[in-house]
Image (cartoon, rainbow, N blue to C red):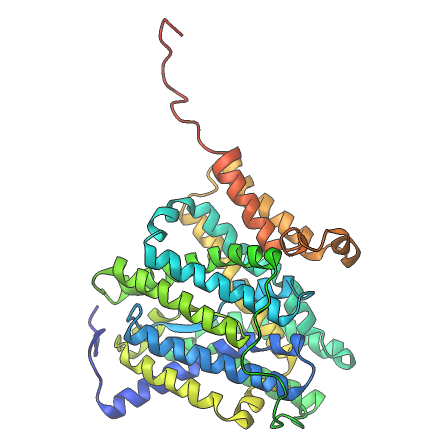
Length: 429
């Protein structure tokens, strides 16, 4: 590829700022699409604003340390969707339990990278398992964006219309837009959707947004074995996501020493997930958004991402700004999340075709059965979930976790190819 600025080039000051602002326009909506979790965990606007501030800070710091000392690639970091699934499945537990489990999971990921165990466990994650994990994240998060889309009981019709019209409009825009415009499509959808919704339903109230939250910046650790196990399984998917992001972008910008970059990137992601867990927010992962932006701008330099990270941290210092950004109506956030998860399902379907993962019935069943079981668990009545013993509920009541367990069982035990099945018999046999 012929870039204006290659991976380790430092653009001039003006160009550096302009490229950093372009990345910032992409990074902000990536953070905001997960910041809504604060509305489900905290009651006051001050607490929700503080959560979003911490989320901005963690993602900004992640981009800074990854660009300078981690994988050293032009990658946008954002809250991991699979951890969002884990949080939603463990909502019965306290935030302290949830985010302590997240910190433990991040520590395990960092340890696997530091000890070199990643290379040993990678063969377990076949294309079929990766496909199922991608689809499970999208399907098991359906209850989340359903709650968001229909959060306003006074405007159900408007919310339903927004869900249909805005999601289709985003698909059309994704097909028609090119270059940088395509990369900021989510931001455009948030702006247009918010404007339309507020024009009909009225402006949201920001009263109390600048009040000082009584909650601590750090959460006191609280351990629950069941929740920790559930999050460890979620981190399996995060690990695969991180490796895929680093390796795909490294190939696109023709970076050297990809294995070393992958190891450093995973280690730094693990460390920053520990930090996120201690702060009580969703942990980060790298997104594969970069190739389109790089192609549009011609800049493959990693240094503008450092400034973008600084910009996110600066945003975190101004609660008024964060409150305005976080005041996007829940139905709009839900529709955007719906589209993003649809794109993830599309990517998993596309991968299943290119990887010939479903070339026979057993292969297709290995993909289909875990997804169906995860949907049953995700939508089963609360009365059924309550019957499950409390120490097993974070595992057996988590659709994503059970889907991963089932696909591993089908792939590596039940439908495992028999070795020497066609070996000719001898006379002694």
